[in-house]
Length: 179
Image (cartoon, one colour):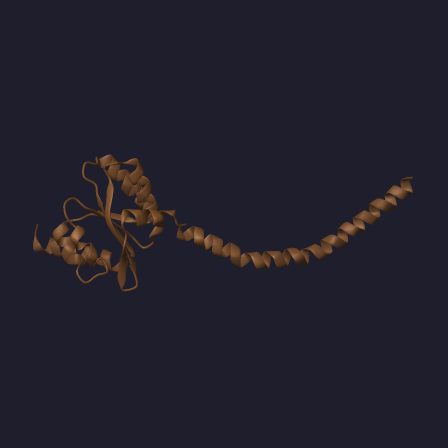
């Protein structure tokens, strides 16, 4: 591989390491192409990327980024799964790991501020059990709209109660007139 190609790869990996909030290293030895393609499709649906690493270049690219603690795990056959929203990829990987015994998450990192928090497989499962960003936004909107919704229902109840009272009086007069 030419030096310019290597520099391009290191540059693109450095951009991934600088601009993503979660990175997971996975061992995928023994998996067939169809399985890896299926995993990539699921990750793509969760707005997450996957890239097979060239370990030496990945170690160089990780230097000086929040993902630097993962350098020791960049050995053998590794894939980097990365994204900006941590819950989506965690859910996909935990589910996929249960389905495919050859796939294994080795290490991970959740970027918080300047540093990062290590994600072991147990912590990854905890992260996967959290609601996704979209679910949290829906709950927040529901809570924000609840007060206005109750207020509008209360305002609507005053004329509705008046109309029901008039209907009851009408029904009573029709009943006495018929008798």
